[in-house]
Image (cartoon, rainbow, N blue to C red; front, top):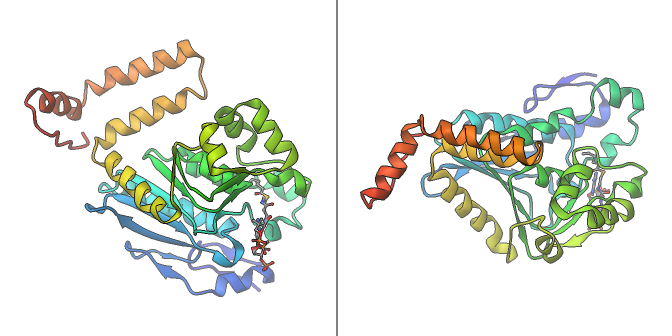
Length: 291
Ligand code: HXC
């Protein structure tokens, strides 16, 4: 039996996918229907895109449909000129407990390799607008990798991060061995990847994986506040700043500094750079136009 999933546009061919496909879809503020996520715009000026992973019964396990919806929502926020930053969160119990093990269980090597399994997850790391992950509860496996694809991670004080794939006989497949190592250094990354042991929010902060920790109920409001702060700056120049910081993970210091310099020079071609400096000199708040 085949069924067209309203939220993903995918033709669902396997009977085991039917229950979730038949679950009620939810409408976002933009009118798009989503099944696995809640999508909204937050902040006083509604300039912060908000995505909440919403498969509570599966601790937000990241099934294909969920990740396709996240990609769709990110595409919509990229196109939305009001939105200057995006917050992604889960529930108090789980940001996400990993890729969906039940969905992966019977996949063959041929299917994974041939279909480039999980390639679409990369969308999270190619968004131009700044993305903040607000992590309460478990961020395990693909959940931890998802958070690390975001630009800033804020953690609730009970958050736990881990890469437990080794316990399932596999390894991280969405950048975990790469981003975790760059974030926390070799020894801790190796320990986490080789033992599957989790680290607490406090350890994550200490090791540089997250930038701030908040009480559980203040995490999302604080992430939105950070998003509002970012969205108040020039979106154009923020994208350049993000691109330049990300280049630090790819380039040598000399190449990276040259890349940075070129983007810095490019800001001088923008109205927003002129406005920012004029506003400082005239002792007023800058009004950026994103051009
Ligand atoms: C599918 C999952 C799931 C997952 C939890 N569930 N994690 N389903 N995929 N990753 C489901 C459980 O089957 C269960 O549903 C329900 O969520 C609640 O989970 P419990 O285990 O009963 O909850 P609890 O005892 O509180 O334990 C929480 C937990 C544990 C410690 C997070 O669920 C756990 O260890 N989950 C797996 C974590 C993991 O190994 N993640 C890595 C996945 S591999 P039912 O219906 O059975 O009651 C991965 C590969 C990445 O991410 C590769 C690139 C992306």
